[in-house]
Image 1: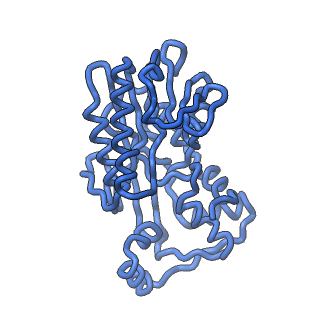
Image 2 (image 1 turned 30 degrees about the horizontal axis):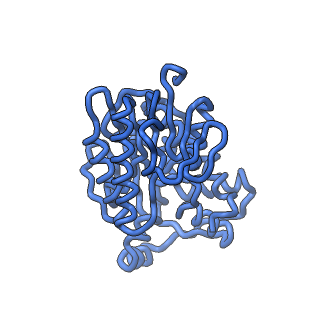
Image 3 (image 1 turned 180 degrees about the vertical axis):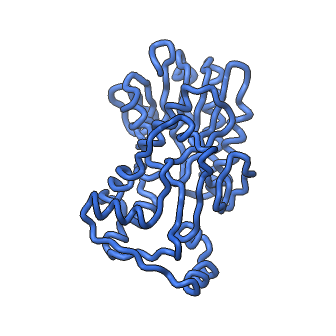
Length: 293
C-alpha cells in the first residue's frame, strides 16, 4: 500500500491512533510533541513545524486534535493548526492530506448519512466543522485533502465517556437502558487507524464517514463483558415515564446514553473498504483499562 515511492508522515505519532498507524506501517515517519524514538521525531509545538518536515512526503495523516477545552482553544488546534499544517504540506509538494473529523459536526441525529447537512451544537463540533472547511479550502491541483469523520472513538489515549460508562457499569453491575435498547455507531482506535491508512491510499477527497460496521448496543456490550471478561453485569429497563423525565431534565446526557445514533451502512467508508469489525475486542480492552475513571 505504501512504500519508498509513497512515503507517509503521521502527525501526532504518539497518539493512540497514530501508534496504531505506525504498527500497520512501521516504515512511516511520524512527528509527536511528547518525545521521539524510532521513526518518531519530537517537536515542541506542531505550529513550529518547519517546511522541510514535509520534504519527500507523499501523504500526511494528521492525528493531532483537541476534544475538550474552551472555544478559543478548540479553534486554535482544530482550525488554525489544521489550516497551517495543510498549507505547509501543500507548499512542500505533498500530494495527499488526510485528517480526523467527527460526527459532532452533525449535532444530535439518530441517523447519519453522507448527504446530511452539518448542524453542530457545541464548541467541539463547531471547531471540527470549521477545521474541515479550512482544510477543503487548502485543496488544489496535485494536493488532495480528505476529512474522515468518526463517531465516538474508544481506546484513545484519553478515556472518553464510553470507557467511563463501562467502568461504572462493571462496578455497579447494573446499567439502565431504554425499552428496545439503543444502537449507536462507534469505532475503536485500532479500527480508526486502519480506516485512515485506507483513506490515505485512496483517491477520495472532501469528506467520508466511517464507523465500525457492528453497532454498539447495551445487550451486546453486556454479553461481551460477561463472556470475555467474566464480568457480572446486567441491564435494567428504564420505564418510559422515567426516561421522558430524564430527556426533559438532561437532554444532552439522555442523547448520549439513551438515543440511537447510527451511520447508514451504505455511507460507511469502513464497510465499502471491506475492513472487518473489531468493536468487540476493542470495547472489551477499553473496559479493562484501569485509567478510565
